[in-house]
Figure 1: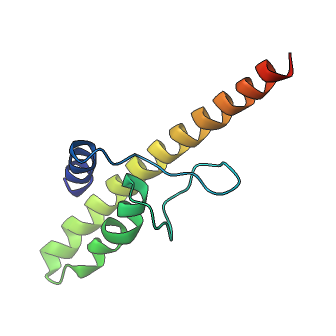
Figure 2 (figure 1 turned 180 degrees about the vertical axis):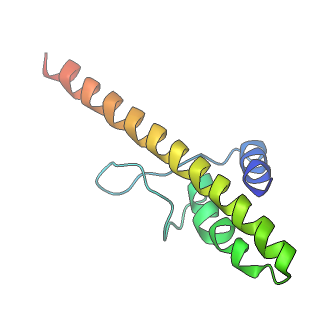
Length: 96
């Protein structure tokens, strides 16, 4: 739910899903200063699962962490792949 809330909030605030690195690649969010979903995931959501203390809480957090990591990695792979494909296509078009 934390991932869903973050995506919804960022959308309402007009914050982007990702930012770009200086070389033009999509950033995974680690160490980013600019706000984005990926930055928020790395800054807050990634570590929240270590802060559950009861046995039941830890078990639930482990399940949720796996789902959150899969979602984050899936979105990052899709965004990064699409961005790179679009960038390559644009470069080919500009060379014509």
